[in-house]
Image 1 (cartoon, rainbow, N blue to C red):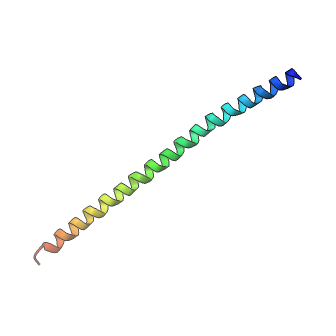
Image 2 (image 1 turned 180 degrees about the vertical axis):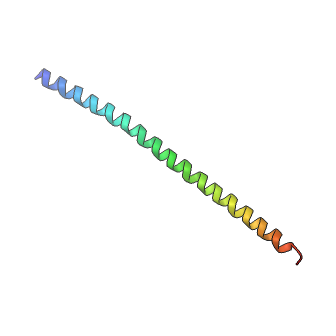
Image 3 (image 1 turned 45 degrees about the vertical axis):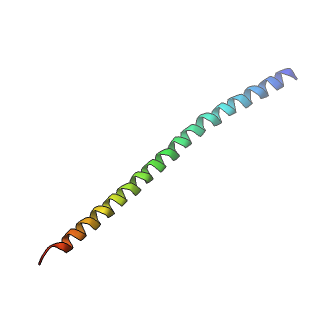
Length: 63
């Protein structure tokens, strides 16, 4: 009975370690996705602002 409990405890510890190690990798992937999406949003805002500024300046040109 003791050997069965010991092997069960060992298996639970092994699986817990496996879950913890794989959970970190997923978290890093999610962080990268949020980082890339954030950069794309910021780039889109900058492009829209520059385009609006240029269009306003072109409208001021005589001709």
